[in-house]
Image 1 (tube, rainbow, N blue to C red):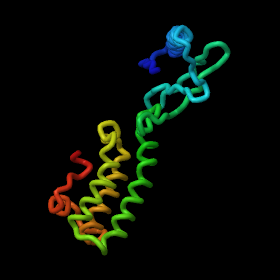
Image 2 (spheres, rainbow, N blue to C red; image 1 turned 30 degrees about the vertical axis):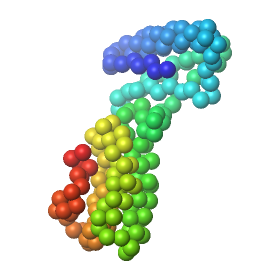
Image 3 (tube, rainbow, N blue to C red; image 1 turned 45 degrees about the vertical axis):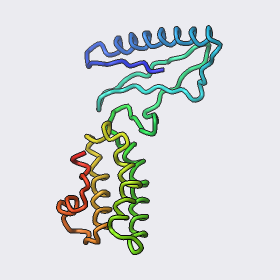
Image 4 (cartoon, rainbow, N blue to C red; image 1 turned 120 degrees about the vertical axis):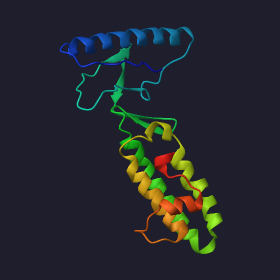
Length: 183
């Protein structure tokens, strides 16, 4: 169940927060009535809600519940493998992605003595590229994407055998791989 509310800054934030909390509770009450009518139940231990806000905005948590069972508030949640934060900065998702990309870099570095460049490029696409392209439409404009781009440049240098400080612009063209900034 997803209930989305958009807040605007105003002098009456507490009134807006209470009105939104009331609306959410009404929707939640109807939802629970529907569940009861269809002999279904909600797992309150696994259900959370995220209150999306802009940076620097304070909000009062709404209490959402039914029959003395309450849903907890979360600052982020994982949905289809993508971590969504209440500030939509995508930092948590990218922080979770970086260790996987480092593992891919290590795997490609380990395979380099045994494989030609074309095979390493295939490993890149199957292991590294698949990770960075999943959900890129959401997190691709984040300011934290620079960390992912640096790892992409590192793996390109590994594949081509270049030095750590060499420019990657020509290496991307040579391999026919799009840099993260152009995807």
